[in-house]
Length: 335
Image 1 (tube, helix red, strand yellow):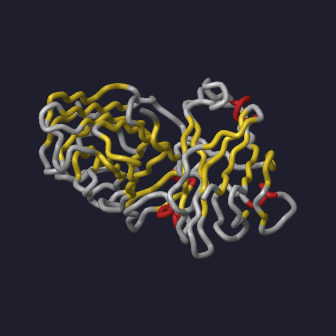
Image 2 (cartoon, one colour; image 1 turned 90 degrees about the vertical axis):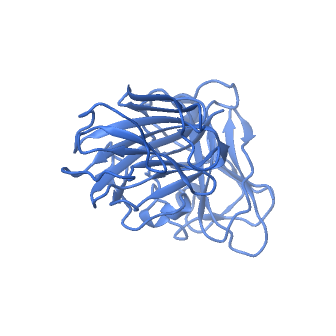
Image 3 (cartoon, helix red, strand yellow; image 1 turned 180 degrees about the vertical axis):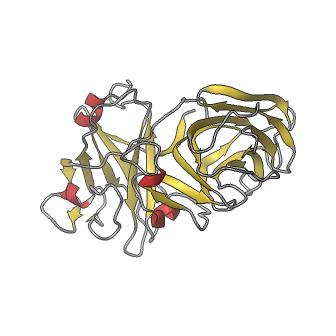
């Protein structure tokens, strides 16, 4: 029971959205102009249907999510089954969605259009960031939907029929507004056990070579210089290897941090020859290498492979700035 995914939308370009998400719609883009905080990026949707969907590792009965949302428009919002966030089953059937209303309220709808409940009016305002959290449990008799806005509970529904498809949630989807209006999203997390409150997802890139440097660099004099771009640059510069058990890890600098709830290691990789290769993410903490979970077979197109560590694997304690800056992060070819 743990964090499943997080994204601050900071470390890739709009053209790489499909390297991390499924069902990427048109008119979706990334920019620093859409970011909640300076120094990052946010994701922008324009109109309903301009969406991105994230598939979970396995089917879940209960899912918690958090995300920052900004409506960059004013005026009438369409009623009907249009939402900004959807919980979807393994057959791509909409189970539950969250809809903002023209009155400044939110409504929770089952996927068939049935309104299960609504908040008070004027809980959100246009042209302002809000942090939204939701808990959804799928059941036709004891379903649950809880919605929090900026830390305050605004909807709490129990003993509901939240089932419009199967018994599970397998993906979640962020979507735009209907009629055609701009909205921004940032700092999303997905969990299967708990709320985390208002969170900021920060991105750090390698700035030093680590204890292992088995891969070959495409250019330059230091390996980390081939993987230090805040926006991944695909084949412009990179490290590569076709040798089993080759490993490369890197150091990072974080600067001052608040409470660290978890870290997510992202490896942006592709296969450049026929065959099967798998990688395993690596954290080196206190002079010991700790392996994560081996990936599925790497594809010929770039994809982001990620793993989350909520605790330092060396001492099972919380992460801190000191621990993160002393640790190293990378990957190993394990198949």
